[in-house]
Amino acid sequence: MERTVDVASLIESDRLSKLQLAIAAMLSALMVTEGFDMQAMAFAAPQIVKEWGVSRAAMGPVLSASLLGYLVGALTLGSAGDRYGRKKIIILGALIFSFFTLAAAYAPSLSALLVLRFAGGLGLGGSIPTGVAFVSEYMPARFRATTVGILYAVYSLGAGLGGFLVAWTIPNFGWPSVFYIGGGIPLVIALLLAFKLPESVRFLVLKAREPQRVLKILQALRPELTFDHSTVFVVREGKPERSSVAALFSEKRAVMTSLLWLAFITSFLGHHFLSAWLPTLLSDGGLSITAAVSGGALYQIGGTVGSLAFGRPIDKWGKIVIVGVYLCAVPFVAPLGSIALIGFLVASAFLAGVFVVGGQVGIIAVAGSLYPTAMRSTGTGWAMGIGRIGSITGPVIGGLLLEAGYSQATLFELTAIPIFCCALAVLALMLHTRRAELGLQATTSPAE
Image 1 (cartoon, helix red, strand yellow):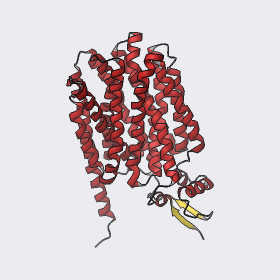
Image 2: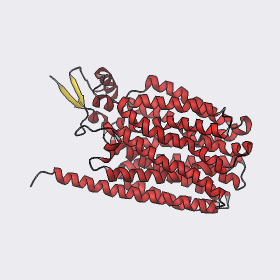
Image 3: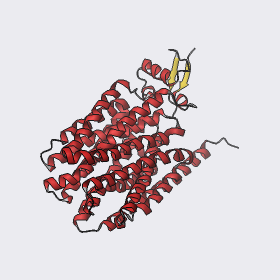
Image 4: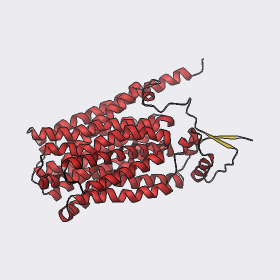
């Protein structure tokens, strides 16, 4: 007799299986190296500026090049994940950014470095959003934001600890050492993922592909249960959905998607300005390169703490926690350029990282859960890709304003504005989705 089993019910179990924990660990390993790679240019920039004699305005586009590549990669490879599978795009993206990051160590000029960083960003744009969608599909809803928080904690840890590492390697081996480290390690991890990472079981079931593979994955996911070849696995998410970009604005999703994109743009603008220019601004303020890079690394370490601290509260209480986290970031970001005492400056940089990155983890977790399986990779990829508009403009605008003579104090005060706007966008998204849920309940309630 045929038996039908909803895959989602197996994932929403009371406990996490060894397979789910292994998936989180494998993606975390990749996120460590990708976090380092995303910050590689910011770590190398102060030394390149001095060695090559280039202006900060000229360095701005190079700092943003990988972010522009990320945008293009997220908008293209993210959608490919909904068609060809999550695993293939995660590994392909990792291999792309590994290769071009290694090549950046041999860049002969600023223009060549810009092209190579753009190409590496294409891979990042494919692997990171698709990885978030992938993890979201394997994790129970009550652990989803927590798991994404862990991913971005190790992502920030890779960026932060990498900063301390290259603070030693740059003086001894030069700025190319940054790209040797950033490109070599993820190459090894990508090969590991190729052999050990399963495909998204929701994706396989939805596409009606490889039933034997589905059975093997689900037996590993729930070893205490018994499935036979007569079992039919399904994904119950209502009517089938298209994976096109237009679908993100259909079925009354236009306001939801627009608010989500606005939150990503404003959050990424503030975060990537701080990530890109904080070491250089500290160096301009009189600190040594080692101290300046270490100060920037403390911002990333703060991000690690924030990622771990806020995941569980977001799972329990929802978007209102994200709103509060972003509001708490404002008083630590705004005065960064006015603090004279090193101790207070370091503390503010650390706490700015705690709240800015902690809030960002929240909106990434939201993006991974708002859309149904058929368009989850597309929805997450486009949200994170569109957010790169803020990532790209943040470093570029910062370089131009520095060249125009704006003070450090003014720059950091201006950076607090988009972070405050992000809090408002998440609040509007929370109210909108709550109204939509209430409306759906009203239309589906039985007649009295």
